[in-house]
Figure 1 (cartoon, rainbow, N blue to C red):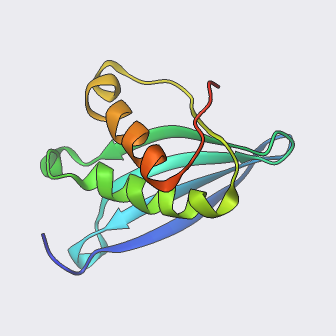
Figure 2 (figure 1 turned 135 degrees about the vertical axis):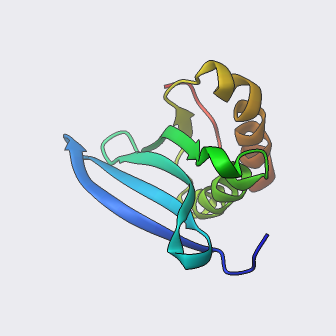
Figure 3 (figure 1 turned 90 degrees about the vertical axis):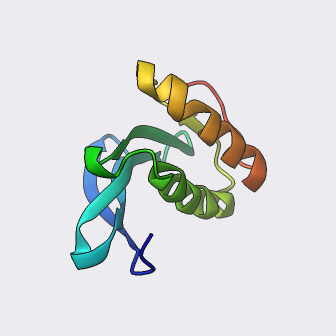
Amino acid sequence: MNSAITYKVTSNGLVDENVYEYDLTMYGVDHIPMSWVTYRKDINRKLIIIGMVGTKPEVRNKGLSKRVLEVLFQGLQQTKWPVCVESYTAAGEIYIRHVIEQLAAKYGVRMISC
């Protein structure tokens, strides 16, 4: 894995009443997006909602989703807000759920049901 990995948070703006959506994207060489997570901040409920986690097909199975999720959870540790996952696909149940649970425990982030 190249050391030229960068991360960027992009705001998608207001998506519902007092709910803001963001994308945290991992970029590789030549600033090509490789993995990302979409999440929302619900200001009224003081809740973080994880939506979609994705990785480009040609770079799957290299731990990139885990890396981008770890950056997210490092930041969530600061908010003290609980986190929920909107839903999991069949692949998400297999590959992502345990990663999110491990990172929540590692960073002391409280997980709740959406």
